[in-house]
Figure 1 (cartoon, rainbow, N blue to C red):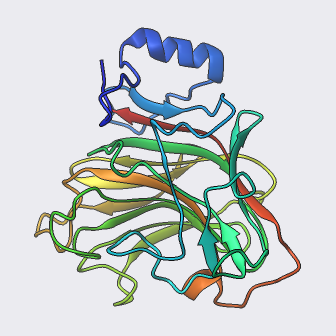
Figure 2 (figure 1 turned 90 degrees about the vertical axis):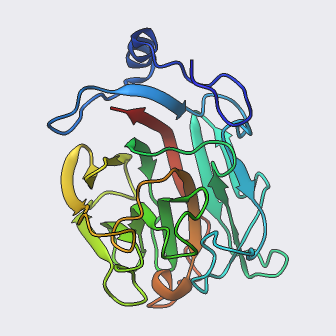
Length: 278
């Protein structure tokens, strides 16, 4: 049995559960070579009618103390309201609006497993359909649960999927560390063109092991970051990380070519999130 931080029963890892997942939801068990096989330890299939607060916290605000990822000059207010985040039709839907909400011209949503669940190593996969248009910046990413090596970027960041609307269909996977980060222009990333990312669902995943992190789209490997074996400045990824789903508006990267005010609303839809160990 696997318990989350609330002390409630989460997903058992017995083979029976994986078989049931295969039957009911088409659970994909493809892994890179060398894997000993999957063990499903956490998932959200979004079959209910509201956000599962035993799995997610919904951040609300236009900024936050410490490191929670809202430091890129983005334009949105993150709101915990149905207009911006809901579960409907078996999907999580995060919607960005141009509605002058509270302190910002735009509103959107951010979900985190911080303080609820985190993982060290494993396969994290998210089936998602992305928004489109100049100024959109959806992300599926991870931050350390407790900054073992200090504040960002010393304790690391894992970007499972990022997409900016001014380069349609180009999906990025990146790590940030003390040695490798965008402030120094030394970040380690890979990219792949997913031409219909805004029209169809695709599987965005990482396989995170002690010696490397691999990035996949639809189980096709497109990027690898290897542990140099030097120190935590290069590889701080030996500690638990939590998962984040959000849709930003504008910002230093998402708004690099401006924001098209005619495209809103825009949504990122998530069919499921699954975490495996191997």
